[in-house]
Image (cartoon, rainbow, N blue to C red):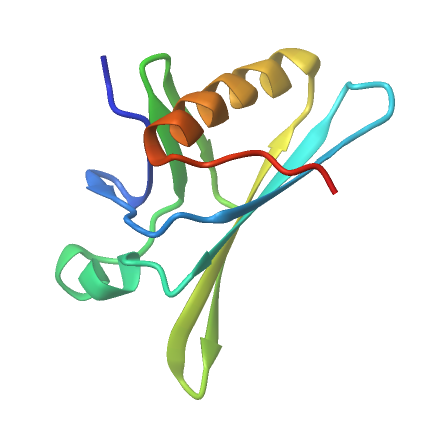
Length: 114
């Protein structure tokens, strides 16, 4: 059973736990998950491992991925990474939620509805 993880460079787990914001359409047909990583560890290892190649959520069911990744810099230094994962069906939403449940349980996270 694969440990649920997030990666920006394939084969290198991101150590920073993100803030995750979810939105879902009223009819439940689509949604967006926005991940914000403050001072992510990928910046520590990217010089020796290469550039960010995407956003990968990996668990026992496989890989969910997105190319919608933005690095934010402050005074020329990397400060945070924002990644978006778009779900275009209720099936994709359900699959994402199964990943998040595993990832949350593994990392001791909790869901807070705002």
